[in-house]
Each structure stands twice: as C-alpha cells, then as structure tokens.
Image 1 (cartoon, one colour):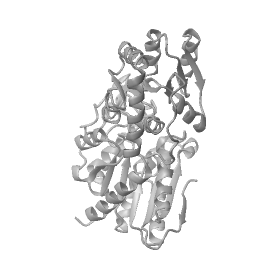
Image 2 (cartoon, helix red, strand yellow; image 1 turned 90 degrees about the horizontal axis):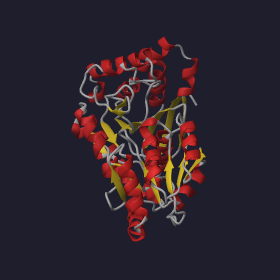
Image 3 (cartoon, one colour; image 1 turned 45 degrees about the vertical axis):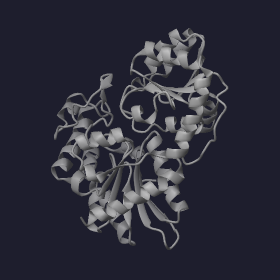
Length: 403
C-alpha cells in the first residue's frame, strides 16, 4: 500500500478531501480510526483521496536512510504534490505521519494553498517515545524542552539511542523552523486533557480543537449477565496488567477474563494458572471481543500512562458496560465517576480490588451505570455526533489558512 493513492467520487456538492496516514507494523486503533473517518466522509457525499505509507518497509531500510526520511521524505513530498496537483483539494487531513511521511507533507500542502488538519493520536510532537511514559512512570521531561535530549539519553524510541536521535532531530528541526505552528491550520486533540498538554508544549491554543474518535458500527447494548470482569488490550507494563493481577488476589468472588497479547503474555498465563478465578483467553478476534464486552459485568482498565482515547472504553460504553479505570490523564474525563464507572488511584491494587468488590455487590448501582454508559456512547461517540464536529474543524482550518 506504500505510496498508494486512490479516489472515490462523491456528490458534486461534497468537498474533496485528502486523508493521509502512515500505517503501523502492528495494526492498532489509529489505523482503524483513519479508515472509519474516510468511510464516514464518503457516506456523507465527499470525495476522499487516500495517501498512505506502511511501516513494513522499515525492515528493508538502513538506519541512516530512515533517519533522513524521518526528518524530510523527498519522495512523499513529491508524491503528495503530484496528487494535490491532479485536482482541487479543499483540505488535507493527516493522521499519523511518523516516521516515513515526515513533516514534508505539510509543506506539499502549503505549495498548493491547501489547509492542513492534523489529528494527534499521541504525544509524538513533544515526546520521542510518544507516550509520556518511561521507566514505569509518567514522564514529561521533554514537554517544555526545545531539544528532547533526555529522550535520547534514555533511548525512548524503540529502546535505541540512534533511532531516538533521529526522532529528536526531527522534532528539534521542525520546532525551530516553525513547522508545527505555521504549517498546520488545525490540530485535533482527542480529549480536553490532551489539548491542555499540547498547549503546554507550545501549540497555539486557537488551533487546537477537541474531537473524540467515534465507533463506526454500533454493537448494541449487551446484557452484562456473564458475571465476570474483563481486561481487553495489549499486555504491556503501561497498561497496568501487573496491578490488575495483584488486585485479583483480593477479589475472591469475581471471575476475571484477560484477552489480549503482548510482551507480558507469558506472565499473565502463569498468574492465571495460580489464581483460580483468572482466565487468560489470549488474543481475541474483534467479534469475540465485542461479545465479551456485551457479556461482562464491567471492563477493568488499569492503565498507568496517558492514554489517548482508548477505543476499548468507547466500545464498552456502546455495549452498556461500565468501566473501572485508573484516575489518570484523559481517563478522568472519559469515565464519569460513579456514573459510567469507577475510578481508582493508578497502580493501587488494593483500591482496585475494593472498587471491584463493592461494585459487584451492588447490582442496582451496576444496572444504573449500564444505562448511563450506553447513554454516554449515544451522546458522544456515534458517527452522527462526530461528523458535524469534523466539518466545523475543516471550516476553521480554511479560515486559519487566510488569517
């Protein structure tokens, strides 16, 4: 799919939008959001042209070449200019441009006076590792630094100092050149928390708008009658899986199903053999994951880093499933305390266990939360709610181009 561009005709009254995305080697939430947004725009009569690159090509790329492309990809610049030259474009909307596309794509749009919208799914502009997480804790060491040298010292990108140096160089060069402030007309932050961090890092406040992701297909409310708690996600340190399993030593009466894969898979499997009420399911297909969410009494989301906007929480709400999650970052605003779920101190296994035991013992409260969770989905995360928000941002980008 590298360098591929294709168009699908829309209604004459629609806009012509170029959506661009650098796909990851392991498919994730950003990839799905990008595809869903393209389909949403087409369904509303717009002509959408997609330009994409794929990180699979990194395996055949020498380190020096990758470093150069991270800073400025001449090929992507030429290909995008040719695409923009082929016909009038109303707006270019970028999702992920790292590492292969590079900020060169913004300059290609500028050459044709095309306004640029950039969705920031993570914190890459201010953190080489993109997560504000290092050494088992939240880390904002590079948020206010014009040169993210601490990220290089700690090898925050791919655990490699040379690779992190390339990322840090890209960030420093384009910050000095004013790329982030002048070449992008509107940024989309997924939450109010993320917006505040982006502004702290130096983005102009008037160019950052909050628009959450949406769920393309409504699974419908489930019953929640399975009687079990569910963890669904990557099995990594930052996801709080160790805290989760420590907590379950003090949760004797609630079965826990863990679905997912990742570096801690063997650790989870071992603990599941030790704890009689923990079942490790491995990686689940999307349909299976949805059915688990529909049946679960609640989702447990013990993340210990600044999540973006976890689609697992959105999917849980769509199923009418409450969420017990860490009171950290954006999760503080996504899960309404004692309305759509329960919040606990990040990393506090004892507090998590207490929250689980209390909620499962109060079926009336749990039922009320199910109704509120479903209502939250309908009011915030449907395509119908999301589309006008996106159109407003596109119009603002056009206005900012000439201001």
